[in-house]
Image 1 (cartoon, rainbow, N blue to C red):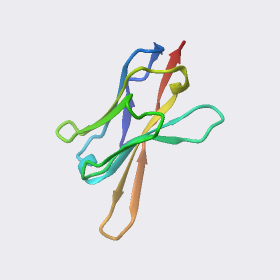
Image 2 (cartoon, one colour):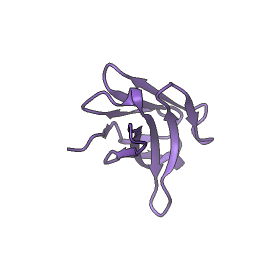
Image 3 (cartoon, rainbow, N blue to C red):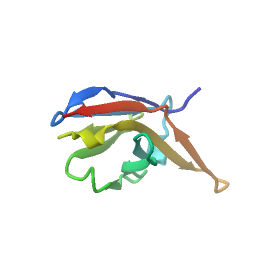
Image 4 (cartoon, one colour):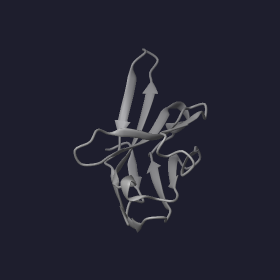
Length: 120
């Protein structure tokens, strides 16, 4: 069973908004560092936005002022709200969460990805 499931990806026109959702079957995000990443063909997977268990948030420069990451511990979800989308935002978006264990290991989980296509 895959731990993380992303949804919300679709094709939109430039300038529009889109929300992505990452869900887990159990409470994990409140004790993990979770991020949204994206990858275009032929490029590496890059972090877009991330939120720590303590609620600290970081954005890639390309996402600042346009994207908002938020966490809902009741729904076991992490959202990525994307506004003013640009064609260069086109990519497969992945959710990742990393949990530290009591024996000092780090468990990393990825979702299957959701495609976002922005047309000009």
